[in-house]
Amino acid sequence: MSSLNLDDFTDLIERPDGGVRRDAEARRERQIVPPGALGRLDELGEWLAAAQSAVPVRPIEQPRVVLFAGDHGVAELGVSARAAGSAGELVREILEGGRPVSVLARRAGVPVRIVDMALDCDPESLPEAVVRHRVRRGSGRIDVEDALTVEEAEAAFRAGVAVADEEADSGTDLVVLGDVSVGGTTAAGVLVAALCGTDASVVTGRGGLAIDDLMWMRKCAAIRDALRRARPVLGDQLQLLATVGGADLAAITGFLLQSAVRKMPVVLDGVVVAACALVGQRIAFRAPDWWLAAHNSGEPGQAKALDRMALEPLLDQGVKVGEGAGGMLALPMVQAAAALAAELPEQPEKPEKPLDSEDSEDSEAAEGSEAAEGSEAAEGSGTAEPAETE
Image 1 (cartoon, rainbow, N blue to C red):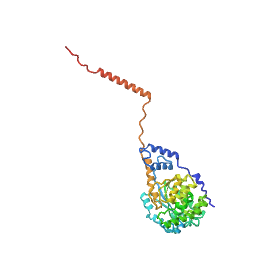
Image 2: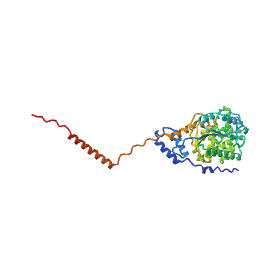
Image 3: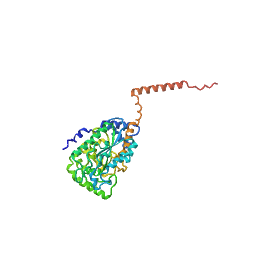
Image 4: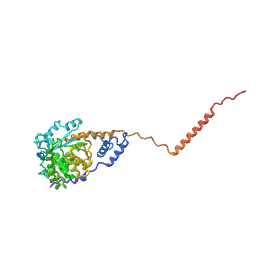
């Protein structure tokens, strides 16, 4: 029996400040570039102002990439182009700077934090800062067994909450949130199908490293089998994460909800994070107001989840690699929106209105008197033609 009361998040999470957003909209109307001319950048700037409760919006100065990592037992079925239990290799490549997110983050000067929740590797092979929150070594094969015990799911969820608090306390003002997993998109597909009430084939994608048709069919079958196990526990979100999620997915869900509590905006990357966000929405319906969808990865499960949460992706570049790379591509757009909202000058004030009617009549009378005097003067000073003399 879990001691975690997820209903508390419904009371703790507030929407971004609507009054501040209206002030930001009014300020935008006064700027020299007409409203709407900057497209979605206008909307982003106003959203950031509401999230920060500040007009003008503050620049994004301390963004951070946070990646939760884990291996999933369902990968043993051959549902992924990567070998089961190989997520640890991806983590090491990121740490060594050789993955796309490493390159993009390095170019942007954004630190990357990796949190091992359930990697299937020796914890001594990775830095202590990476493995200190680990719950278990690999998650269970969700088509035939639970991914976690309820106690493990609670520990993972609480770890995500703790990481969110650590980031908020350190001054992080925006998080690009992603995952590093093998088999994670299969678990994500189960969550999306279960929460959206749809069939396995609708949410089964090809993954970051594209799989062939035979592997796709195996993946679809695994999601179908896990979906049967998920439906009986739909009313208990922690039990759902324990049954068909995984330690990394439970931690991401906890991170998302606590970030909303701490009013820390989050950019969502990929189908795994989108699935966790969908679980988070079930727990606290106001939470998605604090999240941005970075990009459309082409995964059908991600599209389904984002549509359910009414989140429109910022970019559509077909980036499927995961690991926060798509989120890093969207980050400059968010930073640009903040800069434009804060730094574009306002239109100069219009001239004062004309004088009131009484002053106007006096002015007109004075002008008329001066005109008459000028006419008389002109007539008086005119030169008469000399008279003819005989």
